[in-house]
Every structure is written in structure tokens, then in C-alpha cells.
Image 1: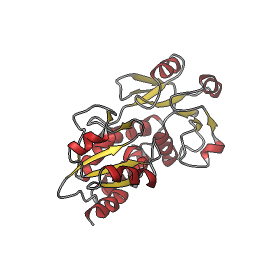
Image 2 (image 1 turned 60 degrees about the horizontal axis):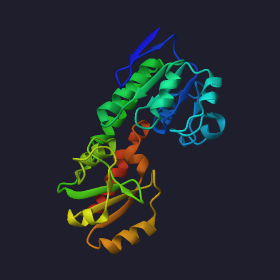
Image 3 (image 1 turned 45 degrees about the vertical axis):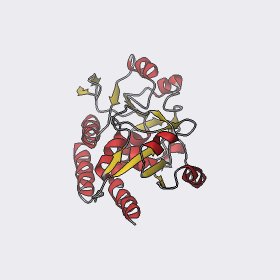
Length: 262
């Protein structure tokens, strides 16, 4: 029997090392692949786009917030991996009545490492998890933050515009980069107005590729209203995925920061 406390404080009991895993979170699905759980993972969401071949080889259980409970039941999972923010609370509570559901809750790198280690423990892949954490740590040692901070707004949505507060993982990575999040005193994902950014003398606007797919045309539109601000498109997966994709984050972020300095 395996006992594991998840990141919401719940004690999750596994009868044995899981052999039928359903992942409800894209970044954690990629992590499961990285750890070598090719055969154990049976179900994923339609948003679990990495690795690509799993989109056709694994059973789709719906969207992260619109799960098909009946399909999940047919898979008879002995472990479901979810996330407090990305999944629907009611649906997760329904699943937890019949299956072991391990829920992550992540806003910092340390919490990401804790999640990776816990999943490694539950799946009997502790050495692989430790190696991955070491690799990510080594890569982040190479991160070169800005020496002079810039007043920054990271936009995740349009109509209305939405940004990130100080209790998010995106904010944590912005801090690592030496970027001043203008909305660090807000929580989660507040709605904002462009005139607020003008009043706050925002120097840098980062337009994420997800969940809203910002494009070049959106830069042009914003630039007309804020000609003095630097506006860039950024990879939302790098800023918000807290699994094995973190290995790629420091390299990408260094390139981004270098382009900002020019």
C-alpha cells in the first residue's frame, strides 16, 4: 500500500504501484511521459498535446474542465492526477469518491519539484524524478535575470484583458527573470484595462500563446495605444507548464531576456 499526501493536504491511498493512470493536466501528462510511463498512462485530456503521439494512442477523457466522467470510469484508473486550478472541483470530488485522485497546487518551482518527487514516489520512479529535478535546477542556475527590472504586464486573455497576480506560477517565473509584475498585489487572474497600463507606465507587455492565442496583429493593435511600451509574444507553455517542460524554460527565458536588452 502507498500513502501520499497531495498538495491540497489530502491523503491519497494506492493499493499498489499504479498501472492505469489518467492524467487531467497537460504539463503533468508530459511529465509522466518524461518519467517513462508510456504504458501506464491510459487516459489524457484533449489539451494534453505533449507528447504528440499520445493524442492518438491514449483515450481522450474530454477537456480539463469538462471531463467525461463515464469514459474515465471505463478506464478503471488506479491513479488520477489532477490540479486544483486547472480542473473542475465538482468533477474532481465526484471522481475522488471512487478512485485515488492526487491533486497538485503549484505556484513556485519548489512546489513543482515537490509534485515531481511525489509522482515519482507513487509510480516507483524515484531515481528518475530526482534526476529530472537535478537537471531542472542545473538549468535554472544558468538563468540570467535582468539587472534592471522592467514594469511588466503578462496578458493571458483578450476581451476582457486578463493578467496574472502574485500568487501564480507565471508570476514566480517573472520574478526569476527580474521582471516586475505590475499586478503582483492581485490574486490569480484579474481583469484589467489598457488605460490602467498607461497610467502605471507599463514598460513591457508579454502576450501569451495560451490560453488566448495572441498573434502579431494583437501587438499592432496594442502598440497604437501604447507606443512607448515594448510588446512581445511569448510561449505560454514555458511560463505556465510546471512539469518536465521546465528543463526548456531557462534557455528560452535567457533568449527572451536578451532580446529585451537589445
